[in-house]
Amino acid sequence: MKIIRFDSIDSTNSEALRRLPEFEDMIVLWALEQTAGRGQRGNSWFSAPGENLTFSVVLKRPVKAADAHFLNCAIAEAVAGFLNSQGVLASVKWPNDIYVGKNKISGILIENSLVGDSLAASVVGVGFNVNQKEFPQLANATSLTRCTGKVHDLEECLNAIVSRFEMNLSCLESHQARALLLSSYSSHLFRKGQTCRYRDMASGEEFWGRIEGVDPEDGRLLISNLDSNKTVLYRFKEVSYIL
Image (cartoon, helix red, strand yellow):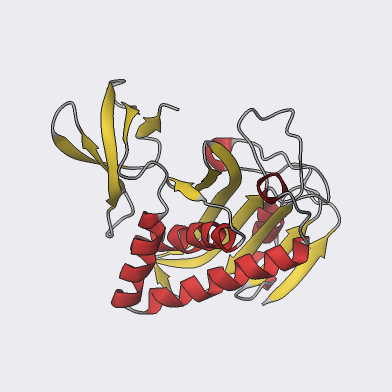
């Protein structure tokens, strides 16, 4: 693992994509400040300079496009697992937001390039709130220091998360190991097994449902619709949590 550190940059994901041909597998781009951080759904990622982790990991390894969801499992489980090691109970709000209680502590953005039916390269971006205490622009954000009452070393946190991620990536090499990774990811799912309200984005219908897990074939979210007594598989953006 090689880390390239920036004092300030627009976005570590953007920089990784710009320089993708020159980077090898497991190059980490870490910025103390992002001026144009990006999140899922085209959202921005706001982070106080020097207080949090904003980094991207470049992956260049043989992964079938159909198995791309396991990359998400690997990084989300790594972040949640790191938090648990710090005594902070974390969950994964499917597919890849990390929550502590009802507050978001981390977001993940994965961008893939394809060649045929395989991934030519992937850029795995992570924004993780570490030492920031106040979030005036965000109503439901938290950080590691707010959860533990301690100030944490950013580089130590980075190394711990990336090491866990690399260990999880090794699980992609066998069917049995993938099943274990998926089970661990599923065990961290936000609201899993709880009866809560959701909205089907296609129909606009609100319903009482219970998250059961994820489909091992493509990572879709499995929810039991308690109103219709049906089990439904949802892709990204097809279902909304009512918080």
